[in-house]
Length: 173
Image 1 (tube, helix red, strand yellow):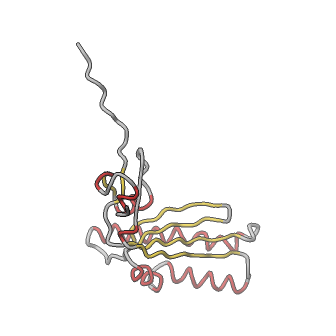
Image 2 (cartoon, helix red, strand yellow; image 1 turned 180 degrees about the vertical axis):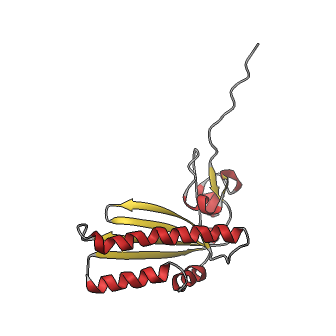
Image 3 (cartoon, rainbow, N blue to C red; image 1 turned 120 degrees about the vertical axis):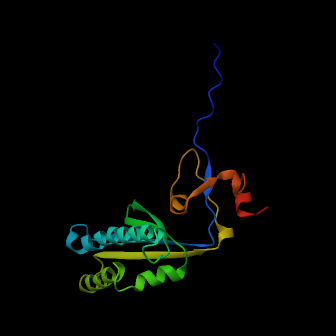
């Protein structure tokens, strides 16, 4: 009895599913006084609450049970200066609307941070960066089973569906 060749079982190379545009939002904190967890702890604890709220809302919106806030997904990272989160949003309008909602987790956390920052300058810092990205300016590659970032937020597709090279996926010569 002869054996047939073993099929290639490597995970596929992927790219992200198409999007109409995207907002990439980085937000993080810097801990300048690590010996004062009473000052930075509440800031640190606020982000998981916001992310839980956003993920729950997204799931409820997908079931038709809630208004879509425009949140697509997030990844939490840790660096030498402190933690930060990369978030993906449908639009600037969605991001700003969430930031101003009094009934959601963000605005109370923002107000609490400002109170602490005024009383204890320099103990803990926060920062954010917002990038509005048109769809033709997005290129992604997820090789050998790595599926995170944007692909995790919006889904993935076979890499060749958008081009074999990064230049092809961006539509540049």
